[in-house]
Amino acid sequence: MNVKKIYLASPRGFCAGVSRAISTVNAVLEKHGNPIYVRHHIVHNDHIISDFKKKGVIFIEKLEEVPNGSIVIFSAHGSPPELYNQAKERNLVVYDATCPLVTKVHLEAKRYANEGYFIIYIGHKNHPEAIGVTGEVTSNNIFLVDTLEDIRILTIPDERKVIILTQTTLSMNDTKQFVAEIRKRYPHVLLPPVFDICYATQNRQNAVKELAKKTEAIFVVGSKTSSNSNKLRDAAKQQGVEAYLINDKTEINPDWIKDKHVIGVTAGASAPDNLVKDVINYLSTSETEVVEITTIKESIIFPLPKNL
Figure 1: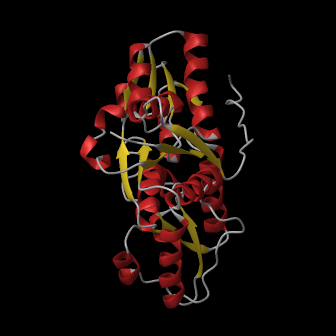
Figure 2 (figure 1 turned 135 degrees about the vertical axis):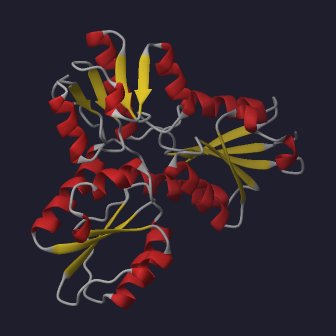
């Protein structure tokens, strides 16, 4: 490898919602000891999940796997109302690590459904965030759009008011295309007062676009199951730069950078910074210059759940 310069994106890595979720699990462990149960992976990062398992955290998908009266944490991605009801019936002690920005979309869904709107929700089928939001309203009041084909099969009565909500971890470019197609069919459709894509997702995508202007290849540190990490890789590729999504330095193929001298590095919103440092150390020699490119400073902090 002959990497002469590494450009490091800032902001990168943990967002306020992920920091809150991880801090919630640590605080619950400190308060109750193990075992504690977490429904779904608290955040989408394999290393974080592995570390929590070593501390006695048990990850489950179904609440039926949790013994009555136990401690359970709901993940940052949000959960449908039926799960809160199930937890209450089973006398579970619930700590809710849902990102406040995801909670905002849950509240929007309920509000607009109550006001008589039909909701077109742009998101990924089977993603826990999408499952949580669409679970807030009855199926005849919401429709999940994952592909452009979904828009073509959608039928909404002319008299219905229509609004678009989106999964927080999507790309602005992706949603623009969906919104344009939806507006062709339903010109009266409304966007929510504040667009739902989260500030951290957009900030990281803007930062990776800046990296793309200066680099020959970009590494995005993050898990394959992380929607925002996948979008970072896609955003880099859309700028015409080779981009690779890697869990950690062990997944780097030296052939990818054999003839490359200027590399960009960033990380998804649930990737810890120590993994980024490992990647930089792997790519660097004593002569490699590391330059951080800051596109915006983030200062948002979310408080822990009220019952902690």
